[in-house]
Length: 295
Image 1 (cartoon, rainbow, N blue to C red):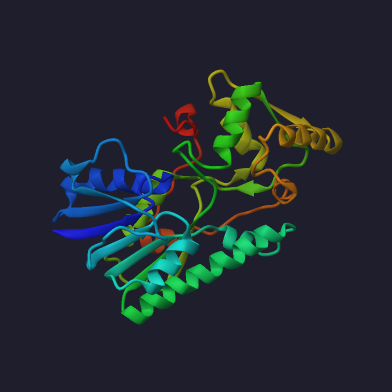
Image 2: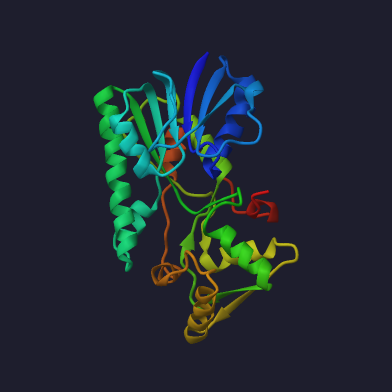
């Protein structure tokens, strides 16, 4: 039986990866035992499906196996990169999730966003260097806007505000292109990296299967709610007023000045390399209300 180690196993991507692996177990020629690491354990350990839960975090990991066939990092890349660089564990395959923010926020108006991009790029290189030194195959996956588990900080927040107020405001001109990606497609891409030749040391963008304007993306989210919420486009002065009210109520997280400015910018990534090398086939953006609920 082969073994995998998953960090961030109860996070939105880690949870989807576990579900994907459990679904595939009966299709695989050999079984997998999964060591799932998380700061908070689920209420019931899924021992019947080969999942061994370990409570801990990258800064204070639990006792881990000396070797595994694959390591998946589904949490903060910066923390994982430092752990992996110092870890003595032997693993032939390493798959780590980063973010397209590594490229989109390099020239951000917000110094904290520029720092984030720098740390992401450094973390990617740290993982790739450690793997190359150990003779392992490491692959970095960069998702775009993640949705589907009700735990993301972008579309789920928009859905929550729309449900609360019955509408959601946007500035006029919020037409920058976006490619939201479902967590299930990210899980499939991560698993596709195992035993895949020719991908060692590569970084793949993982956009969703549809490119659409920011305004249309938000409208679809609001339209799937029960009851649907309205999209209200405001001139800049009125939008700034609405945003200041959200900030005063503590509900404007993720909608800073830099984020608002990006609503008019195209953030589009090429899925061709991932489609060619990983058989990546992301779905179109067809949101449902349940996708924005963590229940």
